Image 1 (cartoon, rainbow, N blue to C red):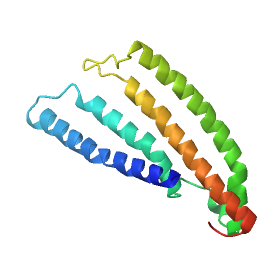
Image 2: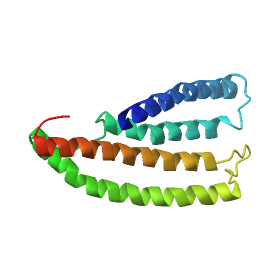
Image 3: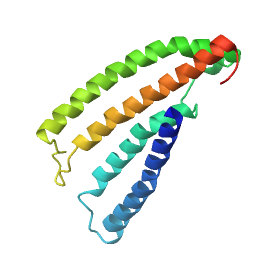
Image 4: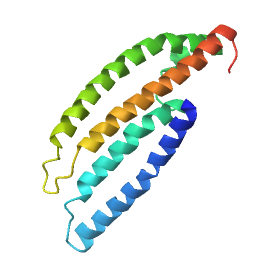
Length: 160
């Protein structure tokens, strides 16, 4: 169930990349061909890329695409890697737990004042701060799912 949620969320937000590309092309055309730059495109590109990054982190972790140092890890057996991952989960969970707590406070404070960017376009930023907290939660949830699989491998010596 966790895996399905992570994969679907990642794929859904990956589609936002197409919209970001469209906005980049639109802004280039407006700025350099028609000499009429937009107020909204630059921030939209930053917000769109941030959403793809934050909401895709859990999917990236699910697919095992985050950077690893393979010097030692790659030489371990499947059981050894599972044990190493299970032990390192403690640090992962502590780090993400603190990030989740901070991002929830950050999002709440932003939501309470209906914070905006302060730019000439001035879009609300609190939805993006809420998305940051949601993305961190999904990454932590993915970590829990991986921990369960790692413990299974560490104890039984086989993949579930």
